[in-house]
Amino acid sequence: MKTLQFLLLGKNEAILAILLRLVNADENWNGVAFDDENEAQEYFLNNKIDIVLLSSAIEDHIEKEFTSFCLKTQPDVEVIEHFGGGSGLLKSEILHRLYLKGKL
Figure 1: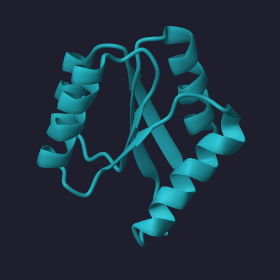
Figure 2: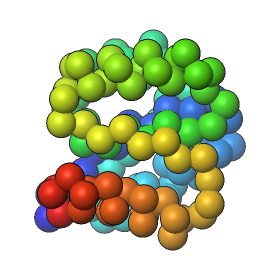
Figure 3: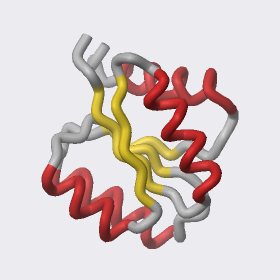
Figure 4: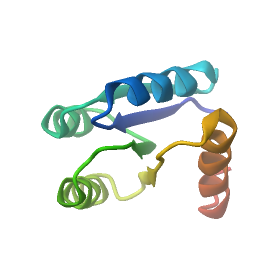
């Protein structure tokens, strides 16, 4: 299995740090995290991303704009909203989405 590249965006730094740790704990996942959507967009433009995880405390309009930007820039990217529930739920959400899209 290829290594999946993740971009995490969220405004709650403590939750974002936990999500980043959980993503990077999987040997087939590599993640970077941002609390600023402009920095995240710049990174996204310069890197192939498989999965975008949207975390907590992002304003609705920012979430919609960022999702739209991601899908227009890299149409194959998976954008997943994740607002908590532990490592088991996170991994299940990601694997379920990849399965549904035929990427597993």
